[in-house]
Amino acid sequence: MNTKSIYQEVILDHNKKPRNYGTLDSPSHHAVGHNPLCGDHLDVELNLDGDRIDSIAFHGESCAICKASASMMTTVVKGRSRTDAETMIKEFREMATGTLDPEGQHHLGRLKVFAGVRDLPTRVKCAILPWHTLHAALNSVNTTSTEAEGDPMRAAIGDA
Amino acid sequence: MKLIDSTLKPEFTSMFDVEHIRADFPILKLQVGGKPLVYLDNAASSQMPQPVIDRLVRYQTSEHANINRGVHYLSEKATAEYEAARGKLQRFIHAREDREIIFTSGTTDSINLVMHGYGRKFIGAGDEIILTTLEHHSNIVPWQMLAEEKGAKIRVVPINEAGELLIDEYEKLFTERTKFVGVLHVSNALGTINPVRHMIAFAHARGVPVLVDGAQAVPHMEVDVQDLDCDFYAFSGHKLCGPTGIGVLYGKAELLERMQPFKGGGDMILSVTFEKTTYNSIPHKFEAGTPPIAAAVGLGAAVDYLSAIGVDAIAAYELELLDYATEQLSRLPGVRIIGTAASKTAVLSFVVEGVHPHDIGTLLNQDGIAVRTGHHCVQPVMLRLGVPATTRASFAFYNTMAEADAFIAGVRDVQKIFG
Image 1 (cartoon, rainbow over the protein chains, first blue to last red):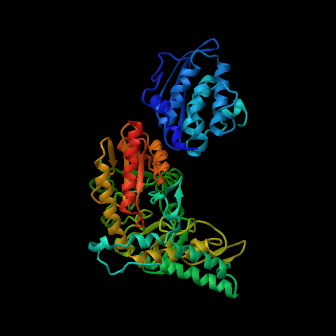
Image 2 (tube, each protein chain N blue to C red):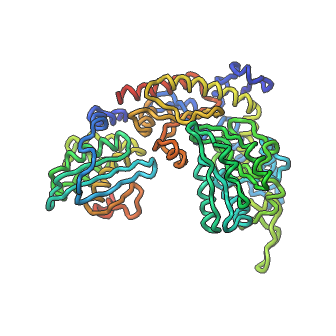
Image 3 (cartoon, rainbow over the protein chains, first blue to last red):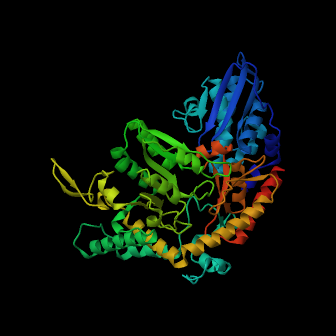
């Protein structure tokens, strides 16, 4: 696979014009994700209305893959239930690490544009960081990291 | 191995025969994703020429046994080759005696040796250690550990926007409590060459010893530890066309003798009973256990190789590469070079407006171009210069002007993609 394809139009577009970029007035849930390897960090804030993600926003310092992943993530989980979001978090992680076939059954839709990171081992974490952080926010763990001990992703979804 | 005439003067380095030199490096023939490798990550690790590879093979094929022990042929041979390597390293950095050369696993290990052997014995509560903003984490963290253990303080020399140390401020940091100075010779992230000779003289006038981290200097310039008059000088083999797992700590004999051992074990003792152990003399006091013998022999061959080309000729050629690449890169709109010191080695750290360094690194890799991206283990420098991370192209004497062109074209392509 030509890994250059990771920088597809849709990813470049979300990097340039990230959706739901910024902060919420009084988020019910919030978490910060760090990638200590590159110093990147990401804030994910959300308001849960019962079990439903009513609103979501993110901001931070990150590469194009991370920012586009975060931007597209916010557009797909907004309005969805916590359970749906957790399913997508699990599926995204599996796709990025190569254990889920992007052409098979899943709920990721056009997020499959990120499937190419499986061929870029050093960039998998960039794509996954927003999803880690969303998971942490949903579970009210306020700081997470791609290097966290007791990986919250692992605790929730089992060893991928 | 084909070498240029070592009597060449620097002003004639346009005659530097880089194509012949490249032929010595098998890895440079590699294709990455169908493109010829352009290796510009030399500040992280350099590549190994065939004569050094051959030397490692010869050692393992016909010379290996444990050293300082057996009375048999191979043990004596391995010991002789290991000690011959020490002599080569002594001459390479112009140390007074070969016992002032201690083989370590690398720069980090060398600095930790000084921290444990000198720092823990001679630095106490309320004492002050001077470091600089430019230090690699490996010359920060050991001293923080010591400061925490002893209740000592760390004082930091600031830098200007160009990435140069503010020497006036350095001088003002000295107090009667100053007990130690740690400074890197050349910045790994920015390429700044620090005025260590002056800094050492200033510290010595106040009775303060100085450790120089020379990891990024030794591969790129003539280093004379007696001329610098440094008390300790640390560097790594793998940045010097040698193997990984080997490095050097140079220390003045009189200081090394006063220091306590770092690691205990075999080879570093004269006699052991459960009541008392008598330590061996230097350098063996600091070389506990079986050392990386093959790596030391390989490093000896590496400095022979570099000396035959001539470190001055290497420095002059690399400066030409730096000047050319700097000029080309500065012409690109939206590119800012980080680290613009007047005196630099061939390191180009830069940021591109609107593009994260990791994306630059991934895209350049598509063109076979290897650069480093991130904070380069110098987070204080990044913080001071207000950039979270940079992309760094670092050149060696086997790089070419054509590779500099490929690199510039690659950066231009990245800008197009992110348009």
